[in-house]
Amino acid sequence: SSAEVKCSLCVVGIQALAEMNRWREVLSWVLQYYHVPEHLPPKILELCILLYSKVREPQVMLEVGSSWLRDVTNRSLPEYGSLLELYLLRVLLPLGQFEGAEELVRGCDVFDSEQQQALLKIICESQCQWTQQEEMRSAAEEQQDTTRETVLGALSQKLLTMLTLLRRALRSMSSHFYLIPYKKILLAAFMLYLVVVRLDPASPTSLPFLYRLVQLFQQAWAAVLSPIRRPPVQD
Image (cartoon, rainbow, N blue to C red; front, side, top):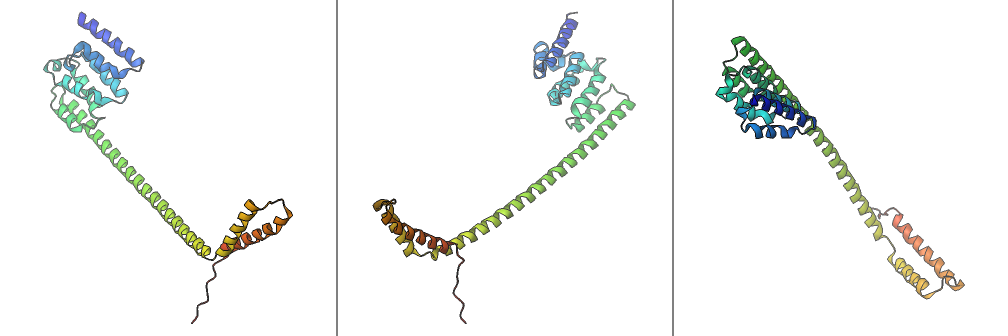
């Protein structure tokens, strides 16, 4: 029939899009031909659920699968039970939709009591695993926060220590600068001006001035680098 041919062509199209890594376009492309999720053939819905579950995007099929399963006409299909179970395992449980999964199983009349209890057990086990993973994730995040705070605290302490040492060094340098013989520095600067501007460095007459200038700079530099001499404390 035309419906079967249409479904077969869509199956081929889904496989082609998946092979070309264009799986994001699959659902919208299929709905161009079937318009609403309730009209999707069971085979198409199954392929879409499996595809988006494989690429870890099950939320794409959350509303689509729910709409299809709520449709009264689809409940009479022989594939309804298997599709409900597939939707439960591949969409609801990976998304943590445990209450919705339990309501769906309890409200479904296609399962007998044994099948229903088996699915409810799977839901309970999945919820326990989900809770454990959340607790482990929270503990890991807390550990990372604690480690980050410890590292930042250590860096802050080191920075504070460096700033303290820098402040002491600046104070020490400023104290040394007070001991610099300013008169000698001024005299050296004046002689430097005479040597550079007024005198010829190659001339023999400028050599005594150069020698005296070097001595003055050596004395000033020694005064800067010498330790601070404090006057003795008198009782």
